[in-house]
Length: 370
Image (cartoon, rainbow, N blue to C red):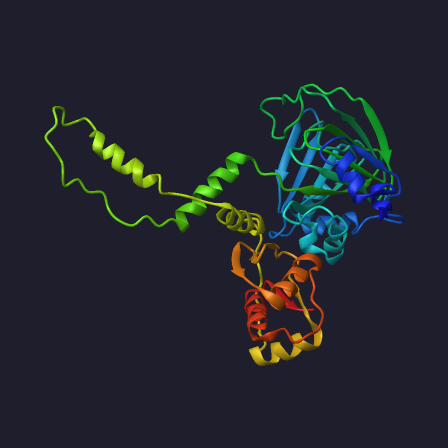
């Protein structure tokens, strides 16, 4: 099926020819799209302590400030050369979550968040590159993008932003409302506002293998079970008391070599790791929770949906929600797969076990009646 969002390409064509490979410019990717909120509404979000926000200004030097801000902070700004950025708009606007849903042709395990930037004329964050894929969807106004496949990705030292020390534009485009630019990882780019404009960035998770390795070792630490204790009943007198005995090294090496993991272990780690919410994400349990009996009745009548901040993934019969895992088979597995794919379940009698799981999620603030 060809998608206007991808310029008339099918998802298979896009993944084969562009994903991780080359940029794609799509004019009128979302017809009639002019954004999801106004600059004033965005500034109000940036004043909340539950919202991750940044303010980038360019005068003689680059400056970077982190929110939460005060409304008076924005009144002091000049008419040019600054940008306000708000992360995870999908957590704060239902329309933001709906927009992100249009990009689920990429696995949800890779999907990160929806960021919005508001810039006055001349505003931008400087020439830079991202270590992940990104779709840049233009809302109100116009932004000029200069892009380059350059290999030199050295950064200017001693700046609060990661700005390329050398940038040579190869191609440039001016994006208007509804236009979209896809860029693969490490593709140099610089976006400058032509007028008051807002750009929506759909980003993807691409942790370094160092991060994954550290996370996996922490995971193994929690899962590891090595019975027994070091012992040396055959200890003999050695010439140097400060020397580590060879038999001691061999015994410890033999037992450490018992640490093993397989594909199931890796899947359990990956599921927990990629479903774990960001550190700044918090859930709000219901102030006056429904009784389990009332919840079950409403579930049967209305269905269930996870909170917009909840991350639900699966691998085989293992399911992962917000860093926790559980198994499911048969009809329960089928229903949970549908929930992971579509983020909603229709009204039905889901059985005591599954309904009980949904009730626990409801009490934790992870989901609610649809």
